[in-house]
Image (tube, rainbow, N blue to C red; front, side, top):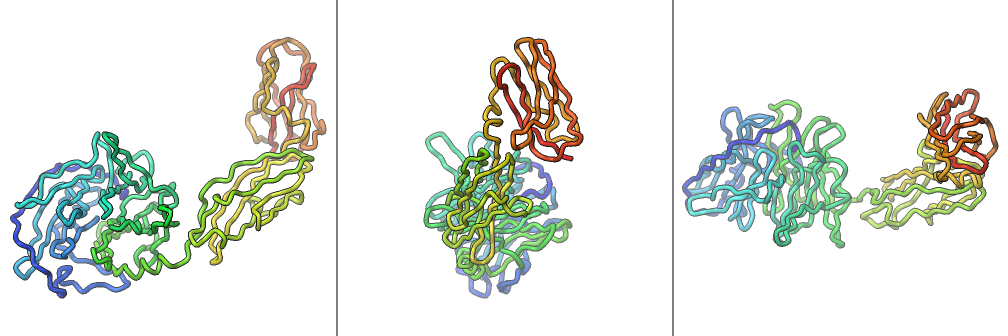
Length: 487
């Protein structure tokens, strides 16, 4: 969870003497604290003076052990994992179990515990007769990772996020084949261009509960459900009261083995605002699973091109937008990116998602396509339609061997720009400007040039804003390029 820069701690292992577990009476579960309803409550855990119980906690399958991390501040300079256990008809501890670690996660019938160091590497330890083995790194070759966990199908998952990572983190599946270990992203839409870091995947892999960095720089919790095809649904924000507004982080997810309670950390810009909370989550998850999913953009729309006087047709592929409630529930619309209607020559059929028309003039349109579901939730994408003039634009981008014409700079411009070109033989050359209809509007230069590199300055004062074509000729039709005048 990226809140501040973290330091790598010194690792010290501590053990405790074990004793036989015993069933925990119902009124003593979770340290005897009254379970919450649909409003988060602080889950009180004993801590060393000056520390707070934060990040992921772990409760054993029988409820008789509670492991939790305590840290002294953000950025962290001291951290450890502590244990409370139910023995002799009472809760004992806390015991210091692992020094230099936090965010415990139990696995393999509570015989393995996964640990996080100071936001860089995942570690594991095995239960022994005297406590726990010395933690060992999970991944080879110094691969950094975050919040490792194991599911009932014996799959491993982690986040590629770590402090100081060069790119936002993704939630990934750990794939090991022979000596090769790779992190396979769970892909869109679960992962986004933002940062997905702290997370919890259900033991049966039916959902992922995770933290995503918000536009304000903090994070909210989201949930994504496994689809029948193995993919993931468009994530839903858990919303209030779990997620608090503005600069507040919600992270460190853990759900009790019976699926009833979510434990998590929440805090804002002040250290004193950070606590471990718990909330009844099973009904919230069930409600989110069966409520409407917002559509999302699955694939970008490629840019298109056409010619004046020739028929233009383009159909938006069915895979462009995905609605997890069923793509047949989507309705489509199209306007220009500035909100204005499409030009008169261009029509859009929402039923077939098809654009048709015959352009009459050169243009460069940016079109916005929206897909809206039955609940009025929508996703959108933009793409450009570049219309060239038939006959004038045919050679744009083609540079004959004897003449080379470069793109003007700056472009767009107001009112002056530079145009450079190379001619291989001395002679008379003309640099002309045409409008979108192919009509000559200005002779930029008409001179005798020596072989070599040349540059002409062009002043567009008096011309209207728009797209123009400039062409260099010398005895035969030469190359052409576009420029944009902004007045």
